[in-house]
Length: 236
Image 1 (cartoon, helix red, strand yellow):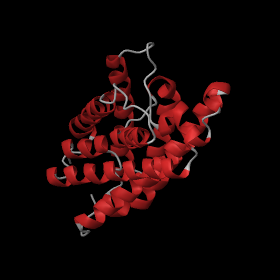
Image 2 (image 1 turned 90 degrees about the horizontal axis):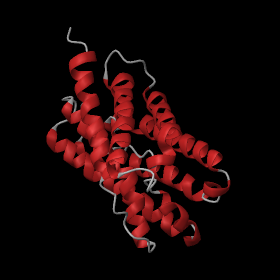
Image 3 (image 1 turned 90 degrees about the vertical axis):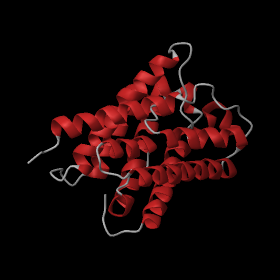
């Protein structure tokens, strides 16, 4: 994590970076909601690109300040890999959730309410009854494993090439293409919770399966952090 920067500035970066990412990611779902049923392939590609590019840009903006976690699961993964202190991790998670919720509320205030119903204001959704909750958790864990491996391999490791925003953004693009139609491919509790909270404000019910977007991503992040720390990280 960047040294010599106050925790307050880091938290501000995490707040605004997550706000930017969720605004772009969830906003793209709202703007193209009509394609969800008429042209699902185009809807998926737009979602993948918007979320991947949006995250890549947000990380590039905030990386020199806070490290560009922008994701409670990534923050926990950094804690497990001993890259982030425990109290800082809690503060990061709070800032990220706040940024995501504010982004969701801004979308509710800015976009026509008629767009909210089919896409839950950009919130990820579990394809039921095709998938069980446990399958949703497993898919989110697997996708987040890929994401956090990309975080460690392109941003955290001192041997990493200087492509952090690009590399991590591309990991999100591929993950969304793999499982976007199944779970929404959130890989990020904040990315899921912000639009879900906004949906409640807009009159929608809070999804009963919300917890898969905490359990799955955190599990995937922890495993990725342990693999990188004990198997791949240089001990020289």
